[in-house]
Length: 205
Picture 1: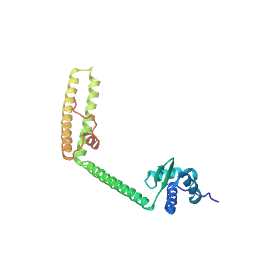
Picture 2: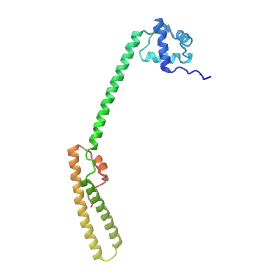
Picture 3: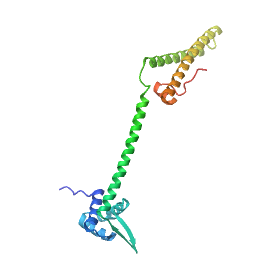
Picture 4: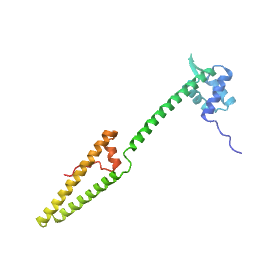
């Protein structure tokens, strides 16, 4: 035979409210601790915690008279508390919905300019080729730096041409970035990430 399932916190709260609603009486904690386990199946050790949660939510009233605390609750009070709680949840839902719409608009806006185009592909390919050429020329210079001065000079001239070409394309890329920032309000970091441009991208010295 399966073990009987215990009450969850909401079930305990509901049953404890029934004590007040059915009797329409005022109780001390010791009274509730006797009634709740016997009539509503609420374990004695959880009575104080459940009662305090109802007080915290404004569903049960309490007052101290002399050295004793008294508790009471009426259906109209509970209904008002539930309506207030429902209104709070509705306001929170409305606020979260508004934030979701703002985020969705931001996502859609961020997609602008990310479309793959022939121009973008050409720029990326040209940039990669120039970087590769630069690395090759640097390696050649390092290889022949102690060799014939004429050979070294030829390599340096070729490197200069490649450097000027790379800087022209760098200038073009900066122009495109400047246009994107003015047109769409994008930040440098977002443009760099979108087009695969390194953060330290700059002219070649």
